[in-house]
Image (tube, rainbow, N blue to C red):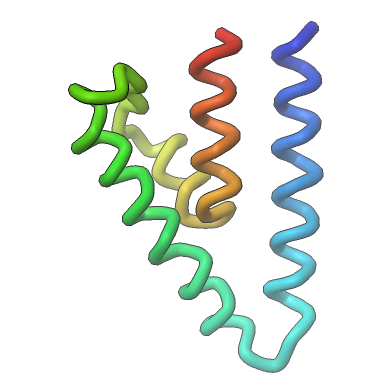
Length: 84
């Protein structure tokens, strides 16, 4: 049940972020500014996994979540790692 709630929260976050990015005049720049911290965050999580114990594997799904959702997406992946 908690998995369904988590996916629903991630879907709402994605809808809000995409609406924000597609609303303005500089759509591509807004998506780029969301993608850079997201990719940096997932790389940082993998580099610090030995210290924190939080392992988020680099696969296509996690990379897409981190690129499109940015840091809130990485936060969702970390929460999903703890819940699952």
